[in-house]
Image 1 (cartoon, rainbow, N blue to C red):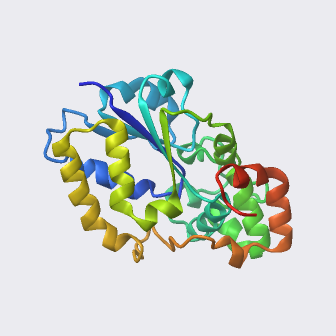
Image 2: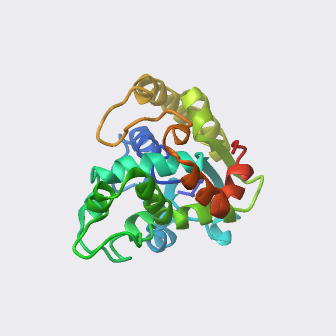
Length: 249
């Protein structure tokens, strides 16, 4: 079995949906045949095992060149300011175990390749920190947490081997977006047909999903929550990636 493609995205950028779609695609295949595996942000584990998968996925990293140049790559990107807002509300309610760990260390945040914000005080978890802080300070703490994610968005090289799709465009037409990935990866006609049916079934749920994982998938939420100070701080450090991916300041 030869690796056909690697999908890369960011925390709060359709990672759960993508993993569920590809898991469902090959669900009838015996588990011993590893057709798809999601490695979250565990890049070392990914590098050890990705060639054993038909399709694999990794979050929050730039793929090393030896991987990027040897396989077809798909990327989902999202307005980085909306990543801040989505992450802020998600982490504030402690949606994942690492958000609830008191006195977190860098190792505790490795699962999402996050930076431990300097605003976290002794004995406090990330979730508790965001509850304590006013929203403006909380958004700045979330921006600090996201620093490695944004650095990777800045550092990805442009390549015809890499298919990039924006979150906002993907949500407009989920079947089309995943069909583009399937075509880019060179999946078989039968696999593409099954994938189309899986995505069509799930696409009607995604925009209105109010599960524990999805809070609000609407674009441009940052306009409602960013204060002038947050906007200025963000643009000073990360404004170039807003421009690079075609978003408006």
